[in-house]
View 1 (cartoon, rainbow, N blue to C red):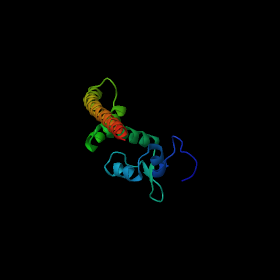
View 2 (cartoon, rainbow, N blue to C red):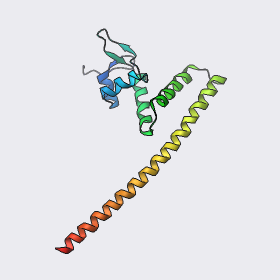
View 3 (cartoon, one colour):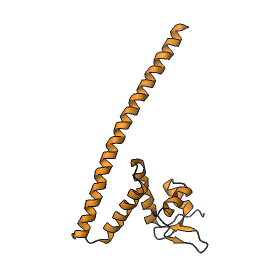
View 4 (cartoon, rainbow, N blue to C red):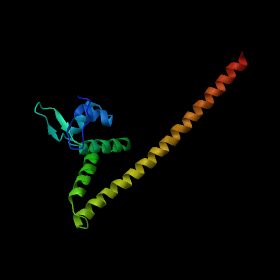
Length: 144
């Protein structure tokens, strides 16, 4: 890959996408095979080529992944965004898409809440471990 960065109108190869997103080549290929982010084009040599829009889609997937979205859910959300960008506002179709997106917002809020609760439990356990370490270090010193 050359040292030059791609501009917004240029296509980039998979290595640059990996560099810009932090995803592995394997993951990028997998998401393409699953239909989440297929390459925008192929080079004359058959290499996958991606656009800035594709990079944005990968970043959106990266936001959904920690929330345990399934591949189907991820695809549905990506399709919703695509459909919303093509649908005229203030129409029944647009409103229906916004309502579907709103159901994901509720799901995200619920998942974030659950993660916060898990984090709280994990932090309590870490504090317990710290207390045990301090207790046993103190006992070892007094026994000397």
